Amino acid sequence: MSDSEANESYDLSYREDTPRIRTREGVELYHESSGEGPAITLLNNFFITAPFWRAHTQELVKNHRVVSYDMANHGASARLDREPTWEEHAADVIGLLDALEIDATYLVATSSSSQLARDVALAHPDRVKGLVLAGPVFGVKGMRRHRQLNRSWLLTLQSHGMASLYNQLYAEVISGRMNEEGGTPGFLGLRESFLAMSTPEELTNGLNLVQTGDASSELLSRVAAPTLLVLGDDDMLLSPQRGHEVAALFPDGRCEIVQDAGHVPFLDDPEHFETLVGKFVEEVESRV
Image (cartoon, rainbow, N blue to C red; front, side):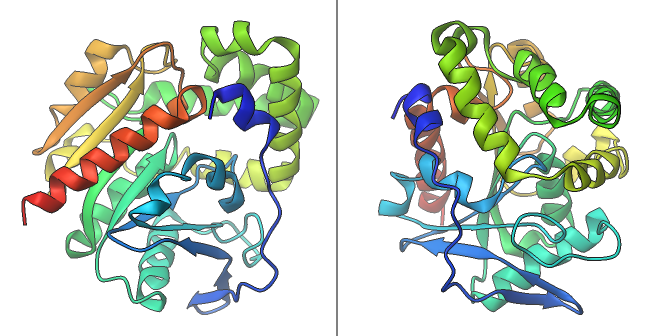
């Protein structure tokens, strides 16, 4: 499926017959689980919801168990008085795996959720078989650049609203090729999905949380799980060279560059992204 086709066909509806999963006191999460095989758990950044992943996992579900969910305080999951901490979000991941009887999983994260994937892998190494980090927010020396961008997005949201935030994000996050080829229809199609998936309050909570947590690049050297970075060559945060340098900080890390892709490479080339994830899982499974 091409990027433009995916943008036009997003089904963001929730499955009403899916029971929520209780992960801790006061928290029940919406989730979706499809397919059989090695488990792959998808971690949302704060701009997308669980149904969004359906368009980008159609091949993976043929040979894997693919799990997506809405984070607490977002989408169709429980609403709390405050945004959970990173530690609480990590506890929810483990609670979800426990409820689904998944002993260990591959975590696929995008943008800011790469920080959550790192934290889960560090706190629960026995539950994480591997990491796929698409458009990771890590730098060779830290995460200052990503946090500056998020502060600018938060300011735009608070001063001008959701539509203006989307305008800014589209220019920065989407690749130049996708921008040119999608034109106005592509811009408007993705905007409809963007506005449908989040509320201003949810994004404010998420963008504030992103400013917290340990930003030290030294933490990456402690991640035992095999790690694949999937980086667009038109990513706003990392150049291809820097991507390989960040991957080298992981004990068992490597970086794949997706040509003509931006910060969210599975939007630019969904089929190639699924192929990369599938081959990575196959490779790690063969080591056992």
